[in-house]
Image (cartoon, rainbow, N blue to C red; front, side):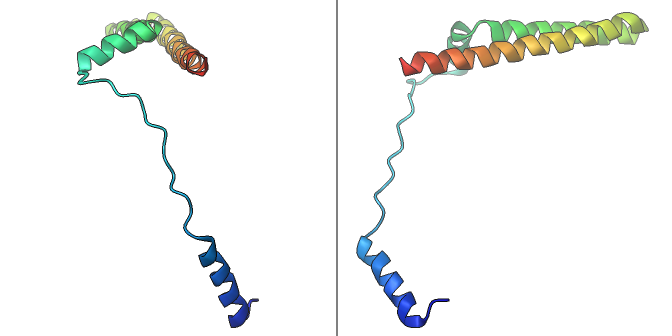
Length: 107
């Protein structure tokens, strides 16, 4: 335990060191007045496999739900498994795009 004299010495030393230096964050890149459509097209050009994977996932899911509603359980199960594969493809495309972007930014 510190006594009152020792505690005062610690506080005095900390005050003599001065305030910590200000942290200056790295500025993020900005895009001038970019709307939703422009951003979507830019992101699609950067990584075209992600929207393709999303569309395939939604298509397989819709077909699987339609098959389930019609009572075709065998096809419905097959489509739900295909949906998992399509989601895996989408995730891999997203991850690959992130890795490619990180590698490109380092160069």
